[in-house]
Image 1 (cartoon, rainbow, N blue to C red):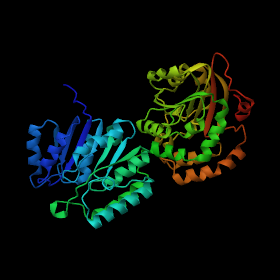
Image 2: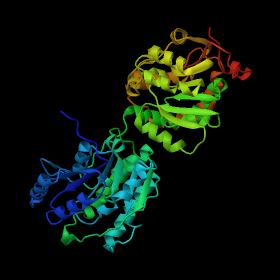
Image 3: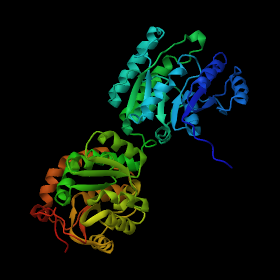
Image 4: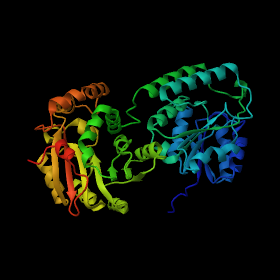
Length: 487
């Protein structure tokens, strides 16, 4: 059976009791000169809307008609449409006539041009627009203000119907709202992911309640709760424990600087950063001749591209050390492979190290930072996706078997072993508590002083391996002092 085609645009039309307008709306959508599919999700209409759409779907192959088994709300209909979408770009379109489909080309243009992952159409920036009901406008303004406060965006129209996304972006987000709270929920979650959001001015022809407008003051209070819920607090359904903990670790400014100070002396000028995540270490690397920041997760690749798209010398690539496709990046002639909290996530760490060796020029270095101590492995490790923790001799042996000469290997962060054991083995937590992370970060200067240069154990291991060949020129007296030699 042939695979369904992939159109440029999927237009999602949530529909509930819109018999008076839905046929004309679909006619206008059909006439837009963009390759598209039209997904009409009927939310158990009682006025004959579904019969109107069903008749049109028989004539127009672009229409996919989906019937909800029970009335659940606009948000549930949108979520269903997103699941069904096949297009490269997804656009949400109300079934009334308040928004003009002729504006699709300018709404999708920022995504097609590679400037954005998300586009909002702003009713308050465009012309022409029908003068709105005063209290409706005031409510929109307040909700947009509150959303901006919690997301640190500067949108002019958070509640707009016209929201446009790259399909992979919106399908990667776990949405929960069934009713009109879907608008602030989407806004909060794309903001937390760090996607590039553009606003495009649109025309607006608002209708009155006698014409079928459904939103009311109760939905306004619900929207306030949704804004606060998703804007101020982490959502485990949207961000799994892996992402929550990694994001919290990324915020630990002092701790990340401590890691960087330990590895910096071994880092050359042409660096492959594996598992760059949101770019914490990439920022420390900035200024070198070449930095190729990589990740295998789509949301992190988007974040990296957004953060560094205008930074000379930084290239963002997709890379998975568990796949031989990673070897395609050897064309960059790296003198350093930086693996900070990466190796423990690989399915086959021995094979990953061999690929890292192949990616390096002769004499190049691999810098590895991994969790130490098999006795500490527990729920927190499983929650963040650790396949394993390492012993010192084991890590050294694996590096040697992959073709590296060991230059340095040492422990770091000795005292934190206690906290990790408590959270992971005793309390069985899946994610690192935010408050503990902040307290730990403030204590880093003291921990560094107490630990000294050569702790006998630690929460992490730092290892430096060199590929055989012309000796690297990066080594320095500073490097010798930064970490203890292999015992």
